[in-house]
Image 1: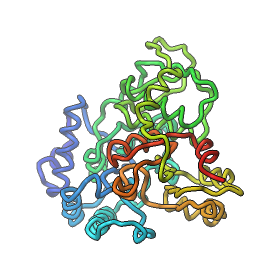
Image 2 (image 1 turned 180 degrees about the vertical axis):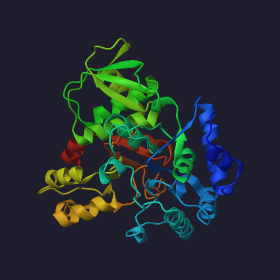
Image 3 (image 1 turned 90 degrees about the vertical axis):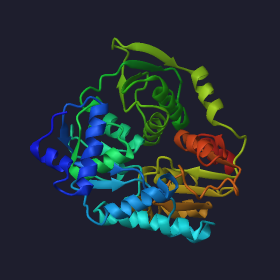
Length: 384
């Protein structure tokens, strides 16, 4: 891989151990993906924030890194394990709380914006079309490529962090060629967000780097995010293009039979002990919609609503949270349904959610049962 003189010096350790490590990660990633060079990026979004996922080794690595390194580009971060405002309500160990605080503090010392959100595209202005970014959160990478007209690969936690520290990323894969190799023909009439999540999950399994989707004329915000979240969960696909069946790619159908297969895989319980909404986290429009849908209604069981802190603050100023909390919801910031220690298999047997991404991680990581329903069905079945 061709490097500039500055990049070669960084790789040799001339700018310190932290940048040397970062360049080693980028070069190894670049060689594995046949990159010809590194290119500048303008924004990095990092994963590897939840203590549940990175553990002691990750916490110690970040603490050491933060002693002598700073990010070079705008850098935002994924959700952590819990909301510090409500952590006392949960049975979390003191060690977990302290380790999570250490991780958050390390990112702040590195110069990272403490966004703690998996939907950075909803809380920050997007740069101009074609801008190169480096996103490790899978749904955000797919949204950036497909809707935001940006360019990123589905980065790993390490490669995105290395990009944040150097301002560079390997020029490979979707950065060079985002031509779909497959067209999926949507055959579901009047699909809700759950159907779009299943479509994304299906696409992630069968497509390569990019996929064309035909038979979809329009999506609302909830449906679009559900599609991105499902696609990012099941495979390598990092971009979708809405088409009209004119391409020469191989075509396969996504119909009721395929949707039922996914539902059977992820729906592992007939009911949930608790409801979770927000994977990806809910944005302001979704919070407003939820407030309207819950008018005069109240949940019959506990409901956890996950959104970015900036969204919760806006929603409170606009009065949206009043109706949501009156209906019995707990609104949590800085964390997400996925991989949260707030859903403990020792206390909760099953969860009701409308998220395909959430369902996958609740099943496989939290090891609890999942009852999959659309938001409209949840409100119909679980409120009075």
